[in-house]
View 1: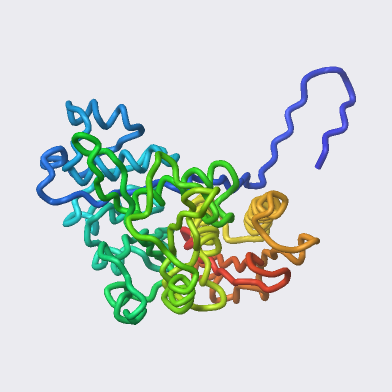
View 2: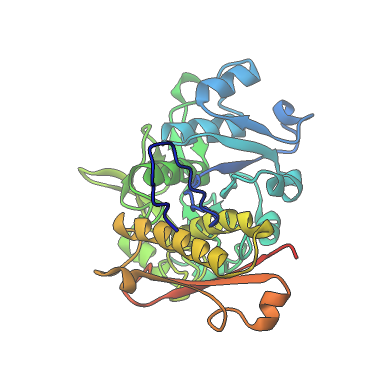
Length: 360
């Protein structure tokens, strides 16, 4: 209730309602899988690296065209990558959960299928970038056979073909894993246009070229079901990323930017809701949570991340007794929020539900 001053002086009015905001976190922080025998990381659980120059300083040497990690990181930073982490392939399942800001798992020439199956799950906020086959895919090969090594998942995408660059001795051509290039492009697109924009129709930097030529017919065979995203060279245009599909062919999760947008929103909202652990499970807390999430989603919609001419076509937030919670939920200290986001078409909501346990 406002104070009505009756004489000059300084008045202090305390607002007892909880304060909350949902902050947007980093969306493209990769972990690169590193060969288990790599000497740089032999005695460390992980290494954080922010630039190509920092990496060369850490290793104490120049670029080695026979070092798989050197090749991957050079391609990553050339294509717009920011800071990330290096973890041995055998330690991914143990170390990635410790790194709270990681959002991408990058194969970088390593086999990460088992780790991805464990780590990239509902609510974890992780997305995997796989390397496609290193050999050429010919028209006589069946897509099911080619993609058999990759599990159908909405939390991952695979890119083909490998790329090449004249980075070897005497400018010899060397092979570059496409996952490392794409990790840099994800970061670049996120920073310049937003995580909801497809990392496709984007030029590949650094003079990198696809190892094998692609055709429209071949791409058409791999652009459905478990999709294979192609990197192609076009006359007078150059080399472009030509595809943005996950490894799951479902209406909601077919497209990479939709899955990654929801990963980002889930993580941001979950982090913000943790403030309520020591708040009463009551109307003032619910209203603070509703208002904060509404502001976050409204900003996302204004930036173009959600579909719809009106806010109510783009998202909704629900919380309250008889709406998302029963009396039993409240007594058990469960604060439940339901949100809907229209990321593909207006008013076609994908529903998320968050449950925060409140200290009793």
